[in-house]
Length: 250
Image (tube, rainbow, N blue to C red; front, side, top):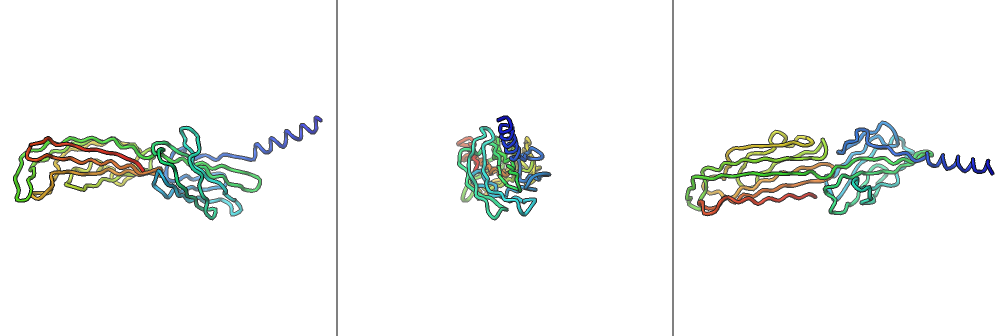
């Protein structure tokens, strides 16, 4: 009986040791992770979406078979989606809405010889944008088709948390032209930063609209966040300038 129990314990111990977790080497969320051990050498996220994911992964041995992948919510450790693996080199899937602000983890299960591995890659939450601005207008001019303000003084502050060191943002002007609040980091990777700017905004001359519309768009491996501001400058000082602001992630 003792020998039989010892054999059972040995088998259980060997089974417990056969499954190994391989975590991010840098413990940072982002687009890619390179691994110094295990069945996968690199994971590369191709998508920039909180609702869909696509990624490439590179096995270290042609005999390695990766059979399962999923995304979990790192706040609760609950599974969010089971993913499809393609040709042992890529994966894709759809994520549920409502988790744009949650950090996530991609987990890929692979089998090599007698070992089973779960390889983890951290996916950041979608970027967070907090943006405020003020406008002062003066010197109204009656135009042939529409009036306009000669002087539009604009000040703006913003805090952006890209949730990952490789997140990027860019600024776009749709109506009129306000100073680029993120000019120092426009289309450059950064983790988080506070911005401020001031200067003259341009309405476009005599035929301009009395509106200013701009956007900040930030993206990382976990999603895209868009902040939109629209200033109604008012007409000949009858109404004070009014700002409409919205921010959303997808």
